[in-house]
Length: 74
Image (cartoon, rainbow, N blue to C red; front, side, top):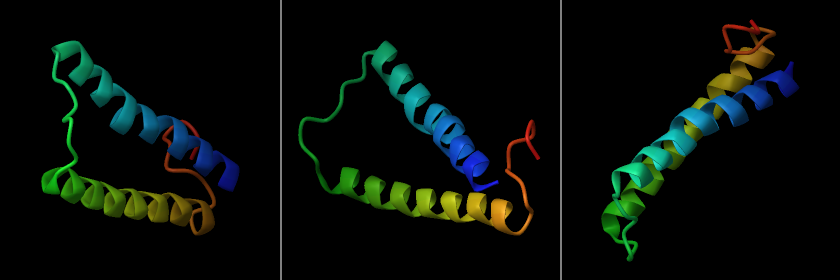
């Protein structure tokens, strides 16, 4: 049950929220900033908080609901 939740988190969340946006930015020609400034740091903090909440919810699905949040593997 936890293995399925971890697999779901790594594959689905990594693909949808990390890989695809990075590819879209690359294909559009938008370059990464050369300097990490306060806006990038604020974004990293907000992203980290969002990731912690997402992981908490995925593990809650596994522990309380005895499954994963993936519709194909309830």
